[in-house]
Length: 118
Length: 107
Image (cartoon, rainbow over all chains, first blue to last red; front, side):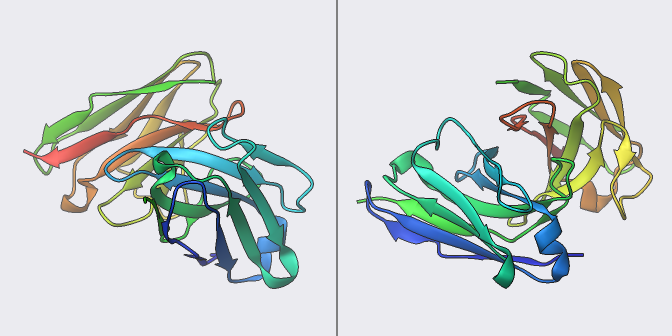
């Protein structure tokens, strides 16, 4: 079972940038697709982005396309989410999650809170 | 984008009772649907995938059914730890989408 741990959240002003990281334990990371999913306070789950195990394909929700970039470094078992031009509506807990090629999310981190506020 | 509509929004039941949760898709997703459980302050947990298959370690009281546009998650006899929010998710097409959730609360 993979362990996932997110970091990089915090309070940021609208229009600014933030980069989230997700570190995975175990060698299975390099063979797994990875996702970011977010949850606004008191709301439901929203899928954000996905990257293939080798980084060759990426997919984004329309709400973040052109502003967010998902990437990974398999040499250090780390997933990233670069978030630019942040808006108040991006305020949420951001989870990273693993996908073993099924597009179902079978392991999740505990999340990191991003608050966009002036 | 495939929209998933869950009903009811809230289900008030007692321990030992049967829970039936619904998820309806705006277009066919075949059997490409999962269910997740989320407790307060915790990350979601995968319960069911491909509509009817239990994930590793999930108790047999959880079962899923359906195909096409209509899906059901059934908890045969509620245990105290089952009171939580449940989400469905489709993987038939991009973007992946989640339903709005059903909260199962103690009556």
